[in-house]
Image 1 (cartoon, one colour):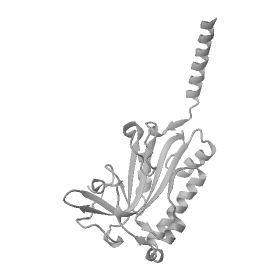
Image 2 (cartoon, helix red, strand yellow):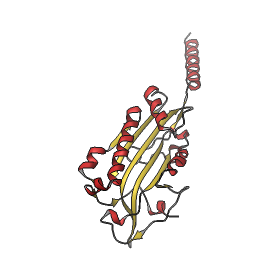
Image 3 (cartoon, helix red, strand yellow):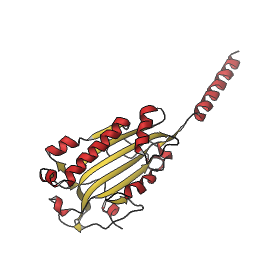
Image 4 (tube, helix red, strand yellow):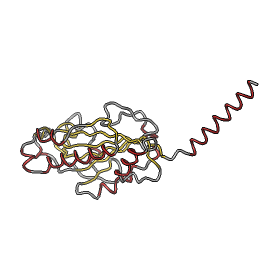
Length: 235
């Protein structure tokens, strides 16, 4: 009797597992092709660089550490993508020490003005700007991940099928106007509200950077950018 009960229990578990697998209407983060974002980003006004990949640029090099924004190159968009299949265990940029799971993927978009500094012992990138970081756990199948509004809507309505987090950071920029428009975010839910927050804060900090009046009341102090290497900015 015990053997029969055990067999029936095992059979039920097997059937339930197969049903769940068939109903799994989403892709894990490591199954997503995040490189599809590149074409959209490269159509913007700033120069887009995918580190070690499709887009490259020259970089102004000096031996002196920049003290002002005027010493930096114009704004660039630098994209870094980490796939859980090959990068599991690394610290996810912008997520406060969180490590990447093998089923996740991570996309980091940096909007930065930079300068490469060479010394006898090291080559370092300094700059100012801001960044948006996405951590993809899973996304419902059929959703175009380049359409972030759709991804956010799916996360809002079907969190069991779409789960994405985001973080926001700024570098070398301080001032009251910045504080009004931009506050850092760490490991927040990317849903409809999150999508709105990102758009609002990006618009805000972009205005601070590009508007002559707001820029004049903002302090720009180039800082060491640990997430970008000189190799990322060179041919």
